[in-house]
Amino acid sequence: MYFDITYLVLVLPAVLFAMIASARVNSTFRRYQGQLSRRRITGADAARAVLDAHGLHSVRIERVAGELTDHYDPRDNVIRLSDAVYRDTSTASIGVAAHEAGHALQYAEGYGPIRLRAAIIPATNIGSRLAMPLVLLGLVFMRWNPLFVKIAYLGIACFGLAVVFQLVTLPTEFNASRRALEAIEAGNLLDGDEMQGARRTLRAAAMTYVAALAVSLAQLLRLLILVGGGRRRD
Image 1 (cartoon, one colour):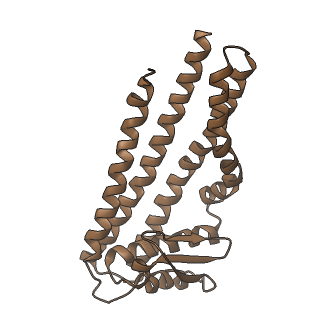
Image 2 (cartoon, one colour):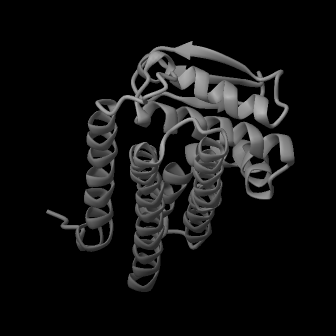
Image 3 (tube, one colour):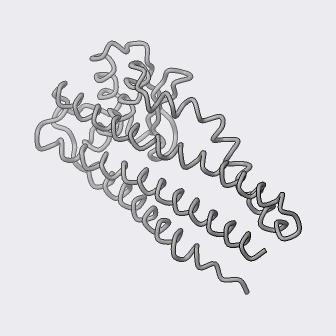
């Protein structure tokens, strides 16, 4: 039986970190869903206020099914808010909605990292589908033909595109949260003590992106070790 120590040492800790981050964002969101804004502003109201304050009157706001499925779609120029966030008046929902409005502001201003992320999405999608098949093909057959070593490394390069995407996503998400909190304060959407709910919700959400990058980096290093080790054995 083959025991993959590289997964145990490299990937598993990152996966556990990602699981903890995911659980934390859910628990934090539920916690601050109980902190209702004194002004009774809904998530949809908050997103609209942020957009209008920056002249983005053409960006639509729609409701979408699911939990924490909130996102900004630049193709349709629409912010889609999950049911709970759209109608909820909690500080957590206002923070999430303002964060999505922050992404709309990034696109409107031509923010560099989000433009780069959008540009590499097609290559990332192709690379994510090809990466593991190419690596596995290379690992299986490299002992018989050195050409398959190159195929394995090509698969790793394809996987590297996903890592680059995760890396570019980090400043995009942190910047959107910063814009959201600044807009909430500037528009007096929340009182001083209520800002804590929005701030902690966005901070917990940001850690999920840090965790995703950690998993991708650990997996990339694991693949490099596996292919490099297989090459040396041959």
